[in-house]
Length: 316
Image (cartoon, rainbow, N blue to C red; front, side):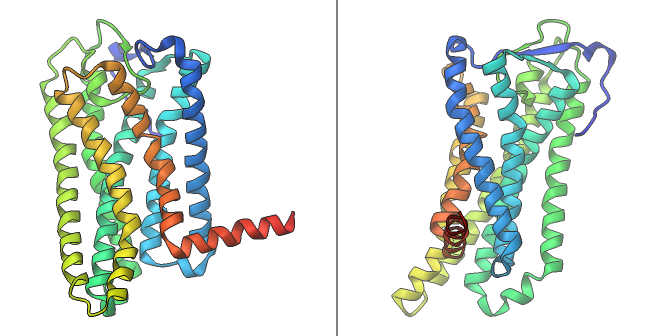
């Protein structure tokens, strides 16, 4: 875990409320959250295992997919275990360094997820628009450069959030009306001007994600143009089929993400209970659904999953 230096007036504990207005239902709400989290962990671990052991899956697309699975594990694990401890054990306390650490990994994994989806769109663009040059363009060296670049970019975008919070004094309430720490929610508790926090915390990540969305849209526009130039219907269906799972994951990721971000910034009429419930579902639903979508819609993974579980049933 990352340790952050904090000033002397930020040494006290913060309290995470959970879901305001639904405190009496926390025990029951925790059950579906726990089930979905277990599905997310098991699904992504199976995906990582298959990609590691099956040589036929040692391709750039599946390497990016394994990176997406690892990032999804970080996203869900950074938030859900603490949420369940609040729901089931009433463990609401969190230290300021712990709050900063949780916030960093939640925001970092979100921005990194977006960058990985952009890299996967580029992979599909090269595979469909320049299939003969695919192996020469996406070499192992190029893939490593992409991975290092998007990881470093995400780190540089989110790290200032941490320092923007450490400069703030928290001399009033330390009660956070949420199940986890996020930048703007914590900053609003400070007894100081938080204009920089609001504008940096909103504008920089959202502009980064929007730029990713624009590049993804350009990639898929070029892909569609190339697909509809193919001579046979079967070739068009096969090319679109390879992109189907990626498009589903993109929609599952960006649709709730933009809703949550815009509702938090501008949705003054959106109830706090609804917003926090939605924010919690967002950090657990996409990580649980991504491996299912790729398992169902990607032939290579679907066949390996069936083979894996049929072999275990035979051994039993």
